[in-house]
Image 1: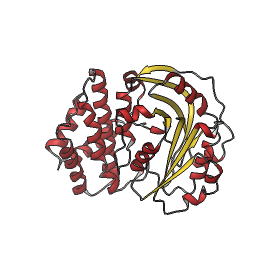
Image 2 (image 1 turned 135 degrees about the vertical axis):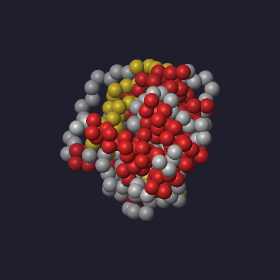
Image 3 (image 1 turned 120 degrees about the vertical axis):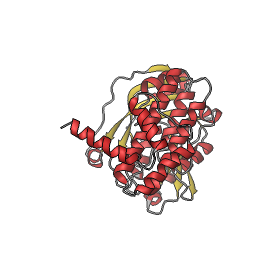
Image 4 (image 1 turned 60 degrees about the vertical axis):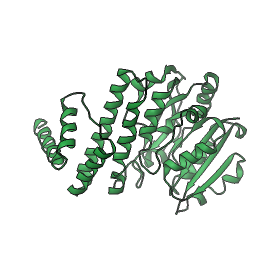
Length: 331
């Protein structure tokens, strides 16, 4: 078994994929210790051409070509092909910080923890282009249970899988998979991983540069098609509330995190889609896919839950009134 599998899904990122792949080979790791699995998700631009000369230079690169089946399926197929003891899943438009990976991998291999969660920087294209180097601080870490990691460290707005080293057997034993065909597939996956993990490492060590503001990126593009993914994201995450053995604290946070996803959904639909019939359709889809969905931590959650369940036709009218009232209060 090799130490590490790095899975890189690629779809129409011709401008960014080369720096991503190059950053993987600037880690000071011997090629015999790791493999790079590039999953070409049916790219229609020059993405694969941009790295065509890099691939034959490294014996440890494998390319999987598939139809455009989504980032989720690309990651699932990469995991199925992986041979490393640990797995890292960077996005193909982002970067690993130079020489950031070895110390994380060594700690993972020493401790055999399920997850190693590191930190990251957010940068624009301009900032990345002007970047000289990023000095590393002294390495520090905390060993935590999965429950502690979930309660103390999981920000529901930042369920990013690329900041984490996953023990491959942990993924396989718990049958962790990305929901096929949806954006924000990180949300249910990350929640399930943290909840099911037994032993973890959390470190402020900088591993990754997250590219912000890229036109066409899944994290910023919005459409009716993307909106249809919200009911699935919420439903799949809500299914985790049925897991056996959840402590009251974990269950409370999990439901609060799902409410955060629901609130993001409401915000995006309200400001991004003007078709009220389609908005109502989405609310009914959430209710259909998750019939027992109800938020009860505080008055605000109660009001939203009752409104969207009982009065879906009037829900966005109430949302509009709430926004207007908040604006008046902040004047």
